[in-house]
Image 1 (tube, helix red, strand yellow):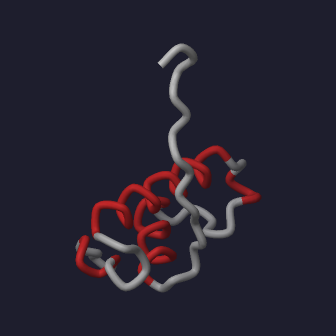
Image 2 (image 1 turned 60 degrees about the vertical axis):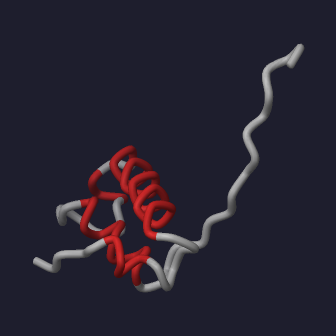
Length: 71
């Protein structure tokens, strides 16, 4: 099992915190898929998401948060 550090994610993201957040969001999306449709099978989803983020396979975009009406 490979261990990923936040520093491994810096080449794929602007900073290590953003890399971890994007990988966590991707792992949640993978978890929502039925197991037979998951591209990773029964492997640990968090590790697979971090591997995909570190290798540059994930594409993401930042969306500004909407403000509440009346603000």
